[in-house]
Image 1 (cartoon, rainbow, N blue to C red):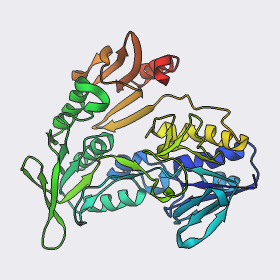
Image 2 (image 1 turned 30 degrees about the vertical axis):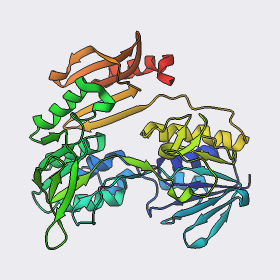
Image 3 (image 1 turned 90 degrees about the vertical axis):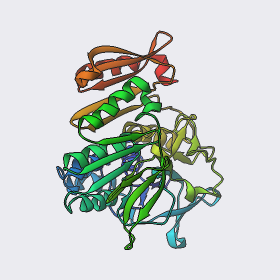
Image 4 (image 1 turned 60 degrees about the horizontal axis):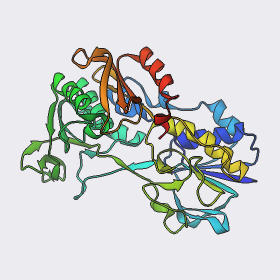
Length: 387
């Protein structure tokens, strides 16, 4: 291969580029990114960056020397609009075509939004520009913030806004936050974190509509149960969808992501996928660690021309909320039972395991990093963890 193009210049894209060089690829390397920024770390956007504890320059994932060592052609602020595998070409906005022998798809995901006309003061939080816009809103003085969705991102935003002294309301359609991810007992713990810190938590109802004032700025949120919640700022954290719209007509199978095998290889061997956009072996994993680990495997397979390696790492996620670090490894299921190993939820400090048929499927901890790390290592040897 003389030219390989990486589509996506965030964590998975950067690690794909690094892995290609580490694997010995010395040909032309093109990195296409829709954002104008070089690769940066996203997790702090909803936490330290939003509260002002860190600045944008602290988010860089690679320094100038590391970027130079990649010897890549960076096409930033440029969107890919199509992929033409038979012609071995990537189509960029404006119709420009980049001839390429191999492609790494690492376009990630885009936030889901609420229906209705755009209103000022309504935000999503996925990119650095998103975070900068929201931080600007929060710097205007105390405001009423409504966070729609109590998943990890929504909870982190609520925590940051409460830390900054804003009046925060969280709206969650499920009966408890993260109920589908953590089960009722641990979801109850997450609910208590919000209320412990003066955040109003409204569960069991969704949002019917957002309403604006005469100037086109959001003024209040109409809930599905008929209640009205005043709002100066609304942040929607209702999940993401894989960024695959631009691949329509490419011939690649698309089904909640780019369908590929456990090694990131698509039915077109010269095209691999990694990170949030990849549906690998039937699973799409929206985790920082997946975006970091999958590219090494996918690029090795790309250079080999076939799937010679598979990614076997387990899902891992962490979340900082209200001064507590939550860590989750594995895949807890709805029928799993939760067993406390250390501490207790009411103490806001514990280590718990999820179990199914006598085997551990996941580990969850609050402010217990060392014992969590030990159980996480043990979990990696559990066959159920790779199911």
